[in-house]
Image (cartoon, rainbow, N blue to C red; front, side, top):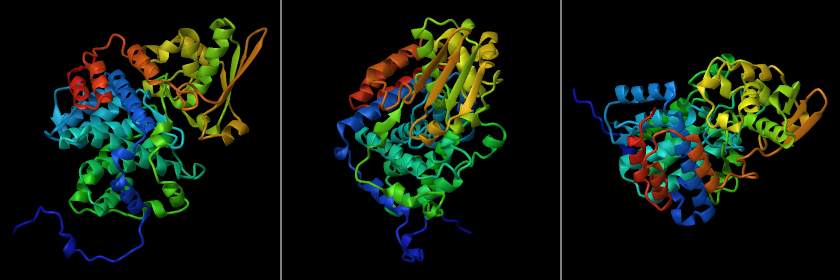
Length: 460
C-alpha cells in the first residue's frame, strides 16, 4: 500500500462558491501589500521594534523559562535551518520561534500596542526572523512581513469586545499575525493563507487556565511563544492541504469583522507601538511614572510614605497584585510590589526587574501600603489608555499625579536613540559582542548579522 505525502490537488477537491470571509479579505490584503508603499515612518517603526525585541531577548535569555524553551526546541523538533538564539543550534522555524519568542516575552520588557492590549512584537519579530533565515528572504521581504504581522494581529485583537472576553492574553490573537506574516514569506496562495490563519486561530492556546490560576505567576504567562509556534505550523499545515474554520472572524459578537477590515488601505498600526522602560506589566507603568515624579520633585524618601492610592482602570485590579510575590512573573504582574521596588531602589531596578528583588523586605513593606481603586473615568479610557492617578500621603502632605500616557506610549514616545539607551542600560554586564553592529546592519538593510550576533551571544 502506497501512502501519498503530496498535498491534495486543487482539481480533485470539490469547491463550492461562498462569500469571501474576513480571513479571505485579509489574505488578499496580505498578498497585495508592497514594500514600496511603506512610508518612512513605518520603516522607522520596524527598526525601533526590532531593536526593542533584541533588547528584551538578551535580557530574558538567562531566565529559567528561556533555558527550558531552548532545551525543548533542540531536543524535540530535530535539525533545521533557523537559529536558536543564544546557542549554536539550527532547528525548524517553529522550534526556533518557541525558544526565541520565550526569551523576548519572559521578562515583560517587550513592546505592546494599546489597540490590541497586548504584545505583538514578541510573536511577530522572532517568527519573521526565523522564517526569513530559513527561506533566504530579502530584507525588504522580511520588513514587509513584520509590518503585515503587526497589522493583522492588532486588527484582530482590537476587534474584540473587551466586556465579553475572559482574558487579554496576547496568545489569543498574535497567531493570526504570525500565520499571515509567515505565510507571505513562504509564498502561500490566497486560499492557503486564508486556511493558515483559520488553523492558527483555532489551534492557538485558550489561556483560560491563566485566569483561574491567577494570571502571570508562571512561565506560560500570556502564551505568546506557543501561540507563535502554532501560527508557524498552521502555515505548514495549510500548505499541505489541511483546512480550518475560515469563518472564525465572522462570528459576532466575539469579533467585529467590519472593524477588522476598516480602512485597510495602508499598514500603519505598527507606528502606534509602545515601548517599555520597565520590565513589568504595562498596566503598572502609569503608576510607576507617577510615583517617580512625586518622589523626585519633592525630594521624598520612601520611609516617609504612609500610604499610596492607585486609581486606575478595573482590568488592572485583575492582575495578581501580590504584596510579596513568589515568582518573577508574579512580581511583573503586581502593581504594589513594583511600586515598592521603585520607591526604594529607583527605576533602574526595573530595567530589568530581577529575581533578587523578590521578598525584599523594604519593597514588600511599601507594597503593603498600596491600595488599588477602580476609577470609572480612567476605566472609560481603557484600552486606548492605561492611565492611573496616584495619591501619595505622608504624615504632613498629600501629593497627587495623574498619568494618562506612561513613558513609551506613542503620545509620550521613546525615540530610537532612547531605545538604544534602553539597550545599553538593560544589557549592562551581559555578553553582547556584535549585537549593536548587527542592529546597525539591520537598520541599513541587512538582517543576517543580527541573527549571527544573537547565536554567538551566550546567555549568562
